[in-house]
Length: 137
Figure (cartoon, rainbow, N blue to C red):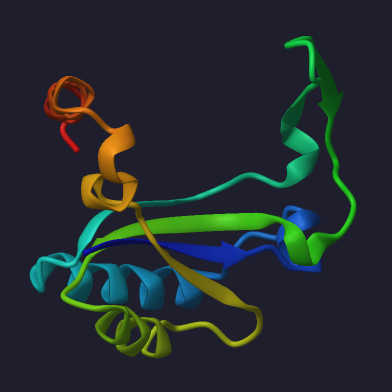
């Protein structure tokens, strides 16, 4: 199963406080373990929301752009991983080993084609497979 591991923002990450050399080294070692175990497919840190934008869509299909920073730090994401694991429990075991001191990490499974039932026709399913192949996912 594939999961997205969301590292929630903190006041420090939203202020743009970067990790120390020691924190970079610890995270690098952890990421290396994930790669060697065949778990980590992708991952990266995100700049503070002040560097971002949001696009809001209305009922008629129109859109508007909102500049960051955004309120509610606890709702923001500071980084992510995409992992391939055998179960949600395995993902949680890995997360609990992550070298974090403060903060919250959220783990959410990706949908699979089977989750969509009959709405995902064989043609639509094949189109999705072609796109994933083209993107390397």
